[in-house]
Image (tube, rainbow, N blue to C red):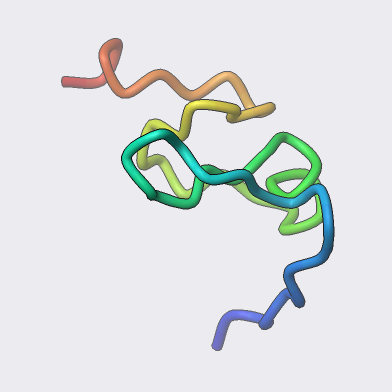
Length: 51
């Protein structure tokens, strides 16, 4: 079971389209890469490289 990480100020921002975009701060707090190609991935995963 995955641990639930509470979302705090600075963990995300809203894109012009209205989507939540998680920041590097949130990804580091979560502690692992989900391999979804997140815009601010601090773990070096690139969706384009793995297609």
